[in-house]
Length: 291
Image (cartoon, rainbow, N blue to C red; front, side, top):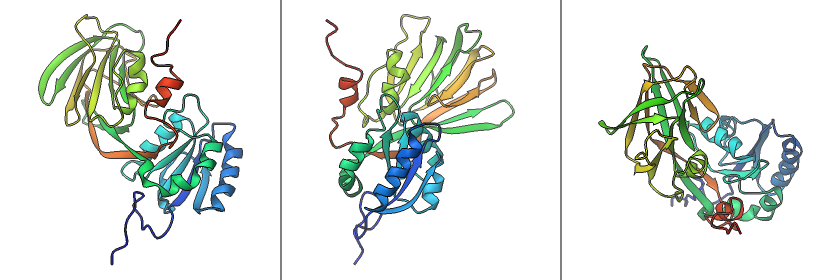
């Protein structure tokens, strides 16, 4: 008889193997890593713990689940590093807002048994695949969890970008650039730029012009099966493609940027005490009276 496979991709006969990764740039993380190494080691199968953001060390150690100590940016780095070897993550927050790193150390300990045994808490999210082809035929590729921002850059004159959607010309966007984001990234730079807020399970990609020099350009949501091609019409010397606020690639006049939904998804274990809009209501005070 074939053993039942749970949401962690393993036999239900044993609990998931856990690896702890900590951001070495966060001053509080080393002590927390030592604390949680001992805590987890007494309650589950701990296959490693390191001050490291390379998720591959956890996968190579046979982990079914990674505990990430840091902020949302730390989690984004680990997701991209995992590439096509995605496994569920638990984010313990040492940053600011904690949209994705949903647990304090206390909450992690409080809910630990549920987190490692309840597959219903796993939240799966889409990613983008960004490919930049230059005139010499050298491609640059990266996964994108939140957003890819084409930013005007210094000397901060207007840039103009030609957009093609699924092989058909869409428009030229002239202004400070363009944000292309996932539903997860809709609460990041996109929100600040006036783009729409999306539930995480919406199947689409958001295009939000940055300060467009046109009253008719507004953010749009396109189908997740869409392929967006961006070609420069007018750039600044400092115009840059910025992925998740962390990876930067300078753009040149003969570059061609192609963005589509990745075949890979990523997943994290959500806090069972949080509603989907918890952060918007409690941290960004969405809908609160200003009086």
